Amino acid sequence: MVTATARPDRLAGLYAIADLPHPAGLDPVALALALLGERPRGGPGPAALQLRAKRASTAERLAWLAALAPACRDAGVLLVINDDVDAALASDAADALHIGQEDLGEGGFARRRARLQELRERAAGRGRSLQIGLSTHGVDQVREALALEVDYIGFGPIFATRSKERPDPTVGLEGLTAAAALVRGALPIIAIGGLDEARAVAAIRAGASGAALISALHRADASATRAAAAALGDLLVRTYAERAQLPPGKTDAGLDR
Image 1 (cartoon, one colour):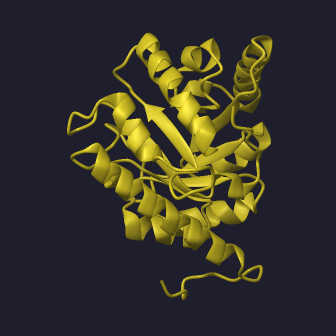
Image 2 (cartoon, one colour):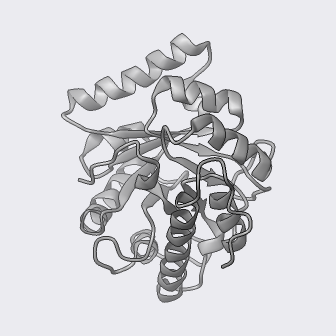
């Protein structure tokens, strides 16, 4: 499986989300493979591929993960399952589990840390090396995520989004900049929420390692999806590289594309 680290550049670029069911009716595996693209390791495309299938069963998710794992491994792409702890632990297909704030349960920091430690121990008990990503929606949650020592954080929604039934309040690019300043390169921060191509570029320029996209990658067929994901993946990696070359404390708002 893919070996992930906490380096921000490990998830630099496109964090593609295969949100199921697809509005155009694409087969789940066909959609995910189209987002991944047919490419050699390090070629244009996403740094991570998340399977987000709220209406599916664990058995369905396991089957899809098993089908996707070889291609993700060959491309060097992190394969992430959203929310489903049982699917994440049942096989070695998933490299990472992404969870929300609600998945850590109620209570203070100690109880939430214990819940996260439980997940890690369950993975270790099954011989798994499982990365954990956590959704955050403000600087206080980012600060807690750093203390929890998750492997990466999602931050948003940056802009208004229709991909969630009850979205959290938007944080804007200003909020993202504040979160990135707090993280200070300690781990990857993935911007999410209402991002299209231009907004994704702006998010990386504002300090994100990567940008998570769902509806902006929706196309009517696999071929068009593949082309869109490859082009956007290449653009966002170049944007990150440009920002990373700037002197400390500088912004890249003035960079020309």
